[in-house]
Image (cartoon, rainbow, N blue to C red; front, side, top):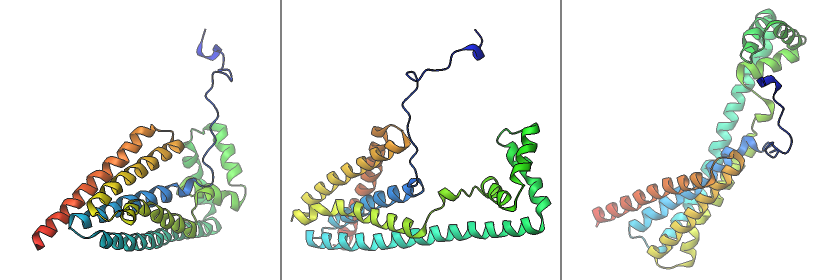
Length: 246
């Protein structure tokens, strides 16, 4: 039996249908970056302060100030970065309007090469070029996707991106601070901070794989390992500074 004669898979043999992430997909990076940065950076901060023999109340104050400052910085940075990127795309699209108005033939001539990347050839290619170049709006949308990779559904709101990044940073930053609210001994609180942060990092790594469909254990452990190495380094730096100043 040739490969073309082989029966198609039945519904029972196919994997279960998995829907796409949807409109939240463009902001996944803000969620992961924000919460991971909050968890790791504040853990490093409190570990460095404890290593420097700072009291628990001072560590708590430093952690709170660091969390608020980090959240504001993250939100503003992501807002400005996203806004700048969107302005660049908008400028390119405006320039494309100009090209289509004054150099329409040259723009249309680019379509075959761009469409050939998708394996479109022969009569299909000719028909596709005819359809996409039929109106200025179609040509602009085709060039936006094919030439610049600008897909309207993937464009990000600067306000939403900033809010997501800052809010998630604050949520992540709260985790390593909690033990210093409950325990008066800095060393004991730091152990608790490590424990809670590692649980949080593993949870973030595992949750991410629910959307990327990668192994959850590996991603969670990777997050924990990176943070643990950084926190250990921060503790030793704080300890060395304390010894040097002492």
